[in-house]
Structure formats: C-alpha cells, structure tokens
Amino acid sequence: MTDLATLTAAELGAAFAAGDASPSEATAAVLERAEAVHAAVNAFTLIDHEGAAEQARAATERWRRGAPLSPLDGVPATVKDILLQRGHPTRRGSAAVPAGDRWEEDAPSVARLREAGAVLVGKTTTPEFGWKGVTDSPLHGATGNPYAPERTSGGSSGGSAAAVALGAGPLSLGTDGGGSVRIPAAFCGIFALKPTYGRVPLYPASAFGTLAHVGPMTRDARDAALLLDVISGPDARDWSQLAPATSSFAGTLVGGADRVRGLRVAYSPRMREVAVRPEVADAVGRAVARLAELGAEVEEADPPLPSFDEMREAFHVLWFSGAARVTEFFDEEQVAALDPGLAEIRARGARYSALDYLAAVDVRMGMGRAMGGFHERYDLLVTPTLPITAFAKGVEVPEGSGQRRWTEWTPFTYPFNLTQQPAASLPVGRDAAGLPIGLQLVGPRHGDATVLRAAHALYAAGVAGVPEPPLPPSPPSASGA
Image (tube, rainbow, N blue to C red; front, top):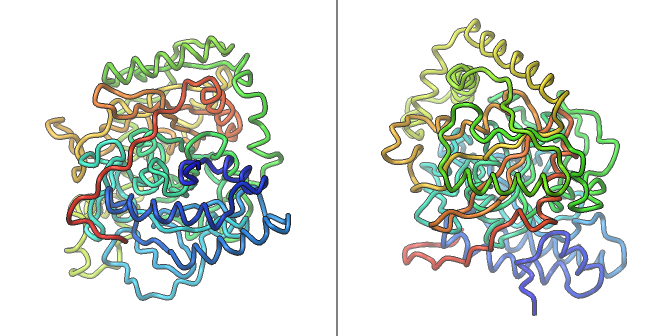
C-alpha cells in the first residue's frame, strides 16, 4: 500500500475523492512520521495528535458525504511558529514569549487553511523571531537538514522545510523577510514561493515591516498553487493586502511544460559579482538550458541593481531596526536570554536614525523602479537560490568563510524582499555530498502566476525535484515534541 505520508496534497485530494484513502488515514500516517521527523532533525515546536485527529475525522465525514470544503480538505499541514494559531502558543522561538498567554486568534493564512478544512498537524521551528537564515534558537535548539542531520535546514522557515521534505505533511506555511522560505527550500530540496507583497494577508503586522511575506512551502509547484489559492483570501486585519486574485493560481498550471513557450527569461548566473560554487552553477545552468528547450526565450542578463554592499546595508538598516522594535520593551533578563546574534543586531538597529531609515527606503524604491523597467523586457529572472549548499547546523555563517552575517551568503534572496517581487525556489539537483541545489525564479510584482507556471513546467519536464531523503535515524537523546 502507498505510504500516504509520501503523497502530495494534490495526490491526497484525488485519493480522498476516489475513496482510496481518507483524511483520517492520511493524518495518522503523517502524525507518526512527524514524531520520527522531530526526533531525527528537531523540526517541531509541537505536534497536535488529538486536535489533528479530530479535524481529520470531520474531514473524512465531509468527503464521505461528497461535500468537501475545498481541494485541501483533510490534507495535513504545518504552521511555522511565527504565525498565530488558535489554541496553541506562538512563541516565535523565544523564551521571552510566555507559553501561558491566551492564544485565541489565527493569523489570516492559518484562518484560511482552517476554513478550507486542512488538518493542522503542528507548529514548526524558527530562529528567534525569524531573524536569520538558519534555524536554531535558545528555546528549541537547532533544526537539522533532511539529507544530512548534522547540517542546517536553512531558515528561518527551516522546521517547515524539513517537515515537508521528510513527509510530515505536504503543506506548510512559512514566512519570508529576506529569503526565509526560499533559503530552507533550497537546502532541503522542496518548493517554496514568496508571493508578491500583500498577496497573502499578514496579521499581526511584522516588526520587520513590508519586508515580511507569508508563503507556501510544498513538495512541488502544483501544491503551492493550490495552497496559494486558499491563503490569499482577504482578511480585513491587514491594511496592506492586495485585492483578491481574479483567477485561480492552480488553474494557470494547465498545460504543463508547454506553458513556458515564448516566455522571455533573463538568466543571471552570478548577478554580476557573486562567487557561486561550481556544482551549483552547473545544476542551475542545466535547468536553464532545459527552459530554452521547452520554448522559453533565454538571454543571459544581469538585473540593474545597485552593488551588494549598498543593497545589504539598506536591508540591514531595515532589518536591524525591526529587530530593535520587536525587542524594544524587553527587560534586562529577557535581553540577556536572547540569541547572541539577535542581541547584536538589535543594539545596532537601535542606533539608526529616522534619516538612516529613510535613506534605506530610498535605495529600496530605486531598486523597485529598476526592476520594474527590467521586467518590461523580461517576464522572468532566473538565478541560483543560493551560491552554496547546506553547511553545519548551529552557526550563522559557514565555518571558515570569513563572513559575519547570514546576508553575506544569501545575496540572491533578500534583494527581492526589498522590491516585494514574487520569487520561488525549486530543487534542480544535488551536489557530490547529496545535498540539494536550488534555482530561483523571480517575476515582476503581481507576476505570481507566471512564476508558478514556469516552476510547474520544470517539474512536468522532470528538471525540478530531487529524490526524497530517507528518514534519518533518531539520535539517542532525542525526544518527541
């Protein structure tokens, strides 16, 4: 019998409709897998056996009556522990957030999932307040990589990426302020989309301002489109949300690999100055060549962006100011318990002036204007997601790199938070150590459907996707969530 924990959301929906499986059976398989995943790589802050089983029973009855709430009714899903989920603590990886508060609200994306009938299995790990591109925190420890548990899952949505890769639910909600769904997707061999800013409503508003996005993390582009259809539903609590989408994102994928014919694609292998590991460059180059074979009009071209020094400094002003804001009212004891790296950037962020902040906004606006002009010529930009593959867990930067902050090894991701463009990561190979390699697709603002269409074409053509990792053995000292 097929292991239901290995199926995509689309495959589970088809199995439920045909009567070949039930949400209760799928949820039981995923809950069992979630415990093993957590023991192996530390991906969860909680696993809700009782609540998930109850939700699954209700979904099973709806499918039995032929009245599912949506195509995702009964599909197991997880939620990054940055997003509010009614009935469970959202501690954001921080001991400063008390577990005993009253948790009575769902974030908009969680509310839409619940309304669609998805089964909420558990909450996944994050670095403290999602501040960095790897997943470890003083509260929950480090999350390992599905392909090599001693290495990082990436971050800040690392628990979600590991859970999806290892079969602990085919859907997860992540957040992305500088690459936080795309970085772990690249390291863990899954698909993730940072939609256009405002496409998915966000509440409470992030301390990191309009850098912060909510996005789907899934096994392929089709599942991401199904999930985006649900979570992009409106919510009055977000004053910056976009108008509702006028058509289904999943519906735009009809046609498979043929859907990229005629797309104008700019391929930037290094964005002028990035040193990319040869294995990464080769895998991404092969995928781009296949795009051309599928009928895309591919041209090597770099986006007209400022230097990385200028972009990184602007991002740091905005990001570090957000870190200062989210911890502004902490007392001395709470500050002393912070992740040391977070404590460093909050102190720096507190020293920026309003003029510093507005100067960073000016850089951002110039980048947005430049990319708007660029996309008048090109439908898509393709880059590596990251110039490297996963390194040791528990550190912010690769050992021996000479780097200080995570933004130095993520040059392809955070620029598109500054410009608020849709950007996706999909797996296009593995290095000699068996670690996944990610390709990034970037579209113009509001070009989410085009990004998904191109990603789906690469999956349909067999270019995207890597072999699923085996469930790693549990360490002797591991314990369940």
